[in-house]
Amino acid sequence: MPNPTAAHSTETDDASQPLISSDAAREPLIPSVSPSTPSDGAPPSADESAATPGFFIWALTLSACISGLLFGFDTGVISATLVSVGADLSARPLSTLDKALVTAATALFALLASPASGLLADAWGRKRVVLVADVLFALGALAQAAAGEVWVMVVGRAVVGLAVGSASFVVPLYIGELAPATWRGRLVTIVALFITGGQVVAYVIGWLFSRMPGGWRRMVGLGAVPAIVQLFTLVYMPETPRWLIKHGDEDRARLVLRKVYGKDQEAIVKTIMIRVEKEIEEEEAAMSKTVHHSSGSTSGFKEHIIRMRDNFSELVTVPGHRRALIISCMLQGAQQLCGFVSQPF
Image (cartoon, rainbow, N blue to C red; front, side, top):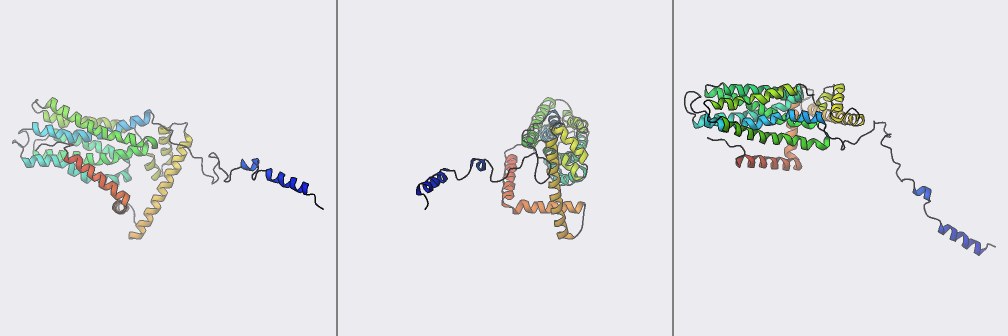
């Protein structure tokens, strides 16, 4: 016959025990994986948020932002130039049409150059496009300074417009692809500061040379100086790692990333290399599928045209992209309508 006292004691002992033992409680329900030993065999990941720009990235940013200074200078200096030119062009005072053509040439050719610079940046590299823009800035400034006819002045302003359109597109891209992720927005913003700073410099120079005979030639000619300075400084700066990886030069890309993050940050360098390679592979796979679906096998310039078409389609049809596009266009329109760049007629 079972002993009821013993049975009650056993039940009491069982009830007093925890449902989960202390050893089991210390074990996680989902086994954790150490960051240093990933289960999929991939190289260890590293946190980029702690990376800060050193002397190299600051020097590169300031060197590239000279294009923003030229942008602001060339769009601002024309105000003082048209007031001071008198009858020095075509041996007669400028008409309203002359002033309109001289002023509008820069904006028109900047509009035309901006989309084309994207294709050139993919084919030639970001750095080379900026260097070409420097050459155009210098040639346009010198052409304006030496102009004796209205049409020469218009051509000089058009050449400057090509440089403005190219630099305004590629320079933020160049800085963004080289800067550490957490500092990318702040460093790219410096370009906008240089643009407004260039306009201030243009107005000061216009004031200084306004009463000097032929001073307007010095106003526009001084635009060649920053372009030449940037041309010589940017020659020693590297191409972006993304462009190098896309064109199969991983060794140079790794060297550039070590300059940006430091030689002792090899884990960050490896992480960025792997991420960029994966992004490029996904882009190329999507692009090849789109190209094959559109027109069979093709390459080169036609691929870029198809990519531009698809990007524009996404920009207009995706609601989030469309809202951002509308807001940016409204800001740009308000900026011009409020007299951001005053152009006398």
